[in-house]
Amino acid sequence: MKNNRLIIISYRLPFSFKTENRTTSVKPSAGGLVTAVKSLDLSGSSQKPVWIGCADFTQRAWEKNRPLVDNDDFEYVPVFLDRKTNQDFYNGFANSVLWPLFHYFPSYVDYRDEYLRAYQAANQAVCAVVSEVVQPSDIVWVHDYHFLALPQLIRERHPNATIGFFLHIPFPSYELLRLLPVKCRTYLLTGLLGADLVGFHTTDYTIHFLQSVQLALGMQHKMWKVSYQERLVQSNAYPIGINYALFNEAYGDNEVIKERVELKSAYKDQKIIFSVDRLDYTKGVMQRLDALDAFLQEYPEWRGRIVFILVVVPSRDEIQRYWERKQMIEQAVGRINGKYGTLTWLPIMYQYAYLAFPQLIALYTACDVALITPIRDGMNLVAKEFIATRKDQQGVLVLSEMTGAANELGEALLIDPLDEFEVAEQLKLALEMAPEEQTRRMAIMQQRLSSYDVEKWANSFMNDLLQTQEILKKSHPQ
Ligand code: GDG
Image (cartoon, rainbow, N blue to C red):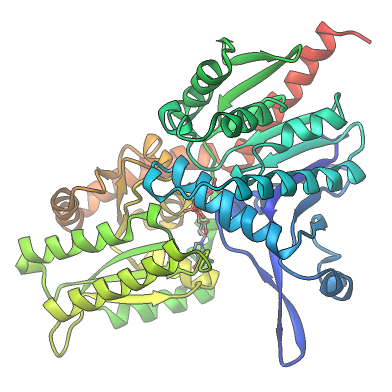
């Protein structure tokens, strides 16, 4: 990869600008993809990689503030979409059609032709920017459900480009995909087939993709490959990893230690249960609260002896389903605290805000149980980060079997997130687990996560992508 420049394309750039008291600063963006891509070690590459994403600032603000990010590891190229297109593309098609559908919430899908048109326009606008930047030896790596159509758009303009695509969310069974109009699903699937390599978190998602291509487009697949427009499109599973060393070493940071000591002393009479997620119905926060209610009901001996620190991070709050969910969560927190709380104890400490990194690590490392219960999740990095931070090899992970991460974390207590009594029972087991057993499970999971970290993930994707080009050269010598 040393001679090839990398071009990353994702909806978000890894930062936004914040102006306070007439001073502008750079604010890092939250979310799994940003965390993963920023963790890549690109020091071997001779050219600065390029990151293309949609701007959440104006062209004027960019011209003014650009020097603030000039020394970053990436060269950034923002794409400016007009307000209405961005609204219908991002809040509309991406997050009110694809996101709920791909996470098996078909009743939340709000399909509209105008949303599809905005999605097409946005993918074309990004393609135009890619075309201005791309050089023949570049490797183009497109990320996520916002740009399913982009590989084929780039391919039409640059037939010999090297294009990889990675989906960070589940790829659903064809029965879900076929709920979309024929023209729409055909557009999305052929869009993906413009790539040389299409990657997913798990083998299940890969199989769903290949079956959809077969059933919707009538194209057979063989050995994880599909032949499309005289090219071979490879697909495979690449379960995303984390920057293991970063999280593991953070345990000993001075600021983290200070925050951890404060937390432990604030809750010295309680065991700490912790969760953190973006505000999203797929993360199962309401079901988690029902499970906590069931736990306090079924096992009253634990009342007063636990605290559940529930952190919800603001996300997509312009979409009705999201702000509605915030209200529902806050009502449930109030109801449970009212039901079980006393004048000296509350079961839930709730925060609706983004945590600074040291605070996040302090919570990962101070808690006794991480309670991670998504209804569906492509992977779930929080589960992996929690394991990586526990240098003390203590703490128990209670994890939904509906996450991609559950495939790699079989030593966690795996639960069905919709069964509140099962979650309650496993939570009790977690709180009562002997320290030696906690260490045994932690050690196995840590070994696994440290040997396949985010760098390995990116490198194995990149190697396979470059391999597709080698195969192509051999079959079409110039
Ligand atoms: C998508 C897929 C897939 C969160 N809150 C705070 C914070 N975070 C960081 C976490 C973690 C990331 O954001 C969240 O990652 P997840 O994987 O849990 O979830 P999504 O945002 O939905 O990510 C997901 C992922 O892409 C990668 O492919 O795993 O399935 O949905 O890194 O640490 N970081 C800080 N404060 C917070 O309050 N500092």
